[in-house]
View 1 (cartoon, rainbow, N blue to C red):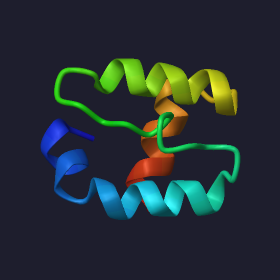
View 2 (cartoon, rainbow, N blue to C red):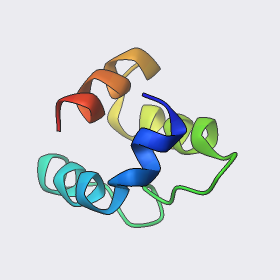
View 3 (cartoon, helix red, strand yellow):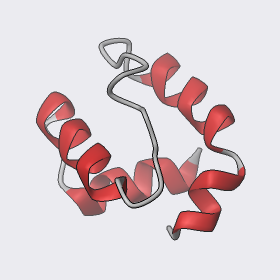
Length: 61
């Protein structure tokens, strides 16, 4: 998953993640350029997943 892939359809992916994991908020899923690792870190903590697991989940959306 590269930055272009995430930015290109992030709003759609964000909605799907919120459907799949109801505990996620808009703040958890804020994606700003250069902040991808920070966002993934927040998701790791909240969902108890590794970065690789999160990348696979997002790629599968």
